[in-house]
Image 1 (tube, helix red, strand yellow):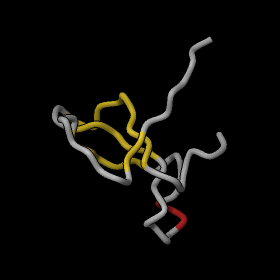
Image 2: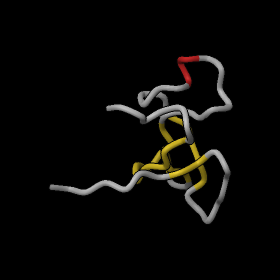
Image 3: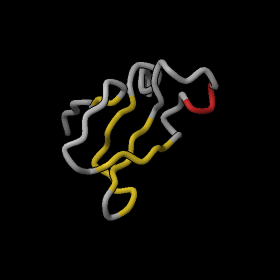
Length: 62
């Protein structure tokens, strides 16, 4: 798993709770290495919410 952390949070399809989605990976804003990891999770609203530190990854399922 390369390049999953450090640029922007990766907005995933996983639910954190009924109103939130999971973001993984951290972004350039965080100095602490424990927050810049694919294992680190953060809660983002599941609505039409935008943020310059949040992105998504396009993946192809074989």
